[in-house]
Structures are given as structure tokens and as C-alpha cells.
Image (spheres, helix red, strand yellow):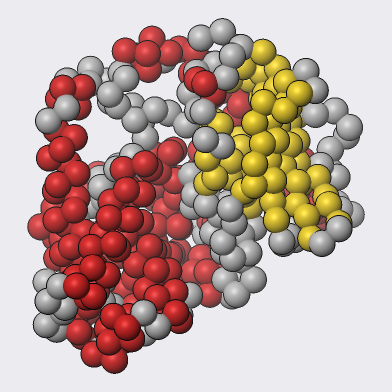
Length: 221
Length: 197
């Protein structure tokens, strides 16, 4: 086992998050941070930073330029909406890339049944911010994770997957604490091809709000 | 979540079934085990099974077994139980024929592993941290996180010393932690992925 000073000196938390430690170093560091609250927090921060940095760079690569290339967003009267529009633009381009990418590699995915599957992560626009037209998500085989922003907390969250107005699946979403988003994994392989409407609602007492909805276009496998 | 040092009193309360201690035990070690199992890139379902089994065995050891000889190293004890559980699960899986077949082109499970950690708010904070940097520093981080280049390769390519890269990574992570994890944590928690089935 390594001690705290050694862990700090070796920048073990970040290297652990990036998978840079050898198996022996990793085991020794785990034995330490299981009892060291400081290092555990550091591992948590490093892991979260690495995951989100990867996604930010991925988003920026999808739109072809960093967010700084759009300085006019910063002085517009409604920066939040502008930022949202930028995210949506990134989503559209990113989704197009993902669909194309998925198509190009589908044969590999079919053959590789023993390996882990690709999972697409798709942010869903908030219900109140949409233009009335539902966001459409096109999928063919891989599971998809739909991410809904939670601008406020509710006592209960429910999801519903409907086809032609009839509920195919619905249930309560288990939420711990006060998350700022809710991830719903849809195992697409179990859905027949067709169009589904996915809705997430939040309820507190008698009040109920639609938190987001989208159309899930499940294509032939 | 609050962290504190483990001691004989904590282990005793957990053994006796004190609700507050049980709640802390569950939250703290779920967090630890998910970080540990994530580092091993286990599937979500296996990671969940290993977590459950580990916590069950720890409580069983405390309440029906010989207990813990070094309460101040209770975390290391949980870690060793997890290692045993993990070995058993991997051994069991390796005996199944499908798991032994080599994959021609391993699937990229990185997106899946990151799913529960990525949120719009966190991405916004990371974006701000990145945009507050010079273009060279931002490119260094892009190579590390996005291209997943080796540190030596990054240093060679951009003409920086390993120590510079080390400090850059540390500062970026600290800015993120200060801006989000420490300030925002009281009002928001990381999202978890809910499975429809």
C-alpha cells in the first residue's frame, strides 16, 4: 500500500482516472484511498473531470470548432438560450455523426456479441424550451441513453414509452439526491422497429411537469 | 457526502445496525466500489452485482463472522473483500464459453463508462475551465483526454516537460473541482442512469 504523500507526489488520482497506473500501482492506490477521504474525493473529481473533458472535446470535434469560435453568443441578450442553441447544434451534428458511425460499424457490432456494446448518449431538450416539434432520435441497434436536464427537483420522476398512443413501458425513475440531469437507458434491441414517444415527467404533490420528450425512431436491425 | 475516518466505534455501530452508520456505509462504499469497478471497465450489470455482493459479505463478516481486526483500516478491508468477489465473478465468467472467444474488434465501451458522470452542468464547467486556458494548454488536454495520447508523446509533440503536463492536469482538475464539485455539490448530485428494464 502507498501512503498519502506518495499518492500526492505520484498524482495517483488523475493517473488512476486516466487508467495510467500499472495493475500493481492501481491495487496499492485503491487500498489507500478506500480509507483516505481526501484521495477518494480527488479520484472522484479526476474521474468526473476526465469524463466530461472527453465529452466536451468530442462535442467540439463534432461541430468542427471550439465554442470560442462563436463569441457573439456571449453578448446576446439571452445567453442561456444561445448556449442551449449551441448545444442543440452540437447535438444535431453529433447525432448525424453517430448515426453514420453506427451504420459504418454495425457489422462489427453484430459479430462482437461478447464485447460491451456502444451506447449513444443523446441530450433531450427540455419540454418548455422546445418549439413544439418533438426532437427525433434515430436508432437501429445499440442501446441509447437519453439525458434529460432537471432544472428543479421533484418528489417523483416517471418515464413512459408509447407507441401509437399506447404505453409500451412505463415506470418510476429512481433518483438519489438532487441530480441536475436524469439518464434513461433504452435497450433498443428489445424494441420492434417503429416510432415511439419517450416522455419523462416530474411530480411534486399534485403538480406535474413534463421534463422532456422525444420521438425514438427504431429502425430495422 | 461527508467523509470521515474509520475507527472501532464506527465498525461497532455498523455491526449493531445503527441506521445512520448503515446509510453512511452504503453511500460511501457504493461510491468507492463504483470508482474501483469503473477503473476495471466492468459491464454495468456485473459492477452492480459485485457491489451488492461485496457489501453483503462485509456486513455478514461483521455480524456473523470474525469481524475486523484493524477498524482504522476498515476501507482496506472492504477493498479486499471486493477483490475476492471480483476474482470469483471473473473466474465464473471465464468458464462460460462466450467469454473466452476473442473479440476481433473490441467495442469502445468508454462512452458507456462515462454515461453516469457526464452532465450538461459539468460539461459547462469543464468548457469554462478549458476556455480559460491558452490554446497550447487546451491542445495538451485535448491530446490527453480526447486522443488518449501517452504523456511522453504529448510532451514530445508539444515540447513541454512532464512536470509541466503534471501541473497543468492538476490545476485544471482543481479548477473544475472548486467550481463544481465543492460549490455545487450541496444542491446537485451526479446523475445515475436508470434502466427501463
